[in-house]
Image (cartoon, rainbow, N blue to C red; front, side, top):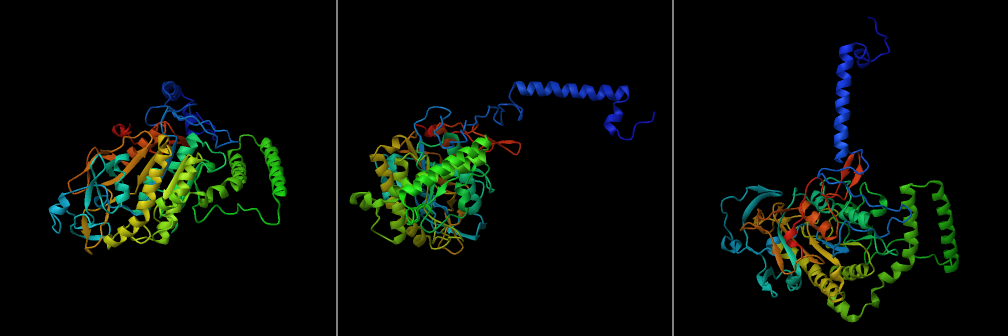
Length: 502
């Protein structure tokens, strides 16, 4: 039989009985399988698809005209806002909050198991903490004299000592902690939260990143970017020294003229949006312009720290110490004020790393840790402790979660230079405080040298899953459909650390 040349090989096979029965039988089986998968919500193309966890996704219902309106959480929670204090460069856990007596016993020795080479080269001997540890508060928590004022608040903190990460490189480490992926281009934690919950404040951004006075961290704006989420949910970055640009009204324009111009633009934007309903990018752009208009009135008042009483300035240390410490102290006051005004997520950076800090612009102390860590601690300790104590006294911790974190830890032994500690991705410490978490509590343990997570290990996925849970969000169900996948902050991993929940 001669087949028409325009038929494909598959089409030709259907012209004989055996091929027809084979192809239709496979097709009917595929339809049946698709029907069964659809009934269980396991097809990506279904109206409410399930993702890897088997749970159906929860996508927030966002009004494109008002993307910042507050939205309900997945379940009731105490924490409504979150303040993240991020310390780029990797704070040494064995010199701050993770007390390891064995380090003193083996000081200057090389017990079996020490690797010959780590991230930056040859290794040296075990080194005891460079600062003495003392018991603090009612809990008797052992913390070092490097951060005495934060240590004095140990009864308010929930320490997690068994964290580990997937990388020992700073850019990837920052990405992983703040976005859940070592690669760039993924939404930050703050973007996920504001995408899910919106904001209680309509006069200020839902998500503010307060950068260190010295500049951006190594991963830059990726730490607070929106990735593939709508652009409306990226962090707005400014600090006490550098307010948002272009908010001041030109002197040649009166307030009345300025208002009439804004009103005209609002009407024009509204008419334009009516022609293109459902255009999320257009709506986000209009919403950002309208927010900028609101910020022209709200931000100057927010940035005016002179309204704070002298007692606050003394407590935070805005007039003492180095210039960097004074500027960081002002950033801490600004962070508290933003939380008071209902901003959903505030990310406060302590350290920068535009070109490799090596202990000078951040906590990356590969050499002379005694000097470089002490310099960073002088900047951070008093202002951060004062901010937390101030927030507690104002009742802000009743509904605010505080997260103090760094991208990984440092080794219990010295580098070959004999004065610094190398990167340690296998064990580090972070702490939580405030709404929803236990206070005066420690979870997990590193091994006897602080080298690896040993008891109740916690991954970065677990850490982020727990923070989302504390905000009333199920990390397995908070997703965004992107490039054929239901993406989430914790990828396909993560378990809530329930033992730290109050």
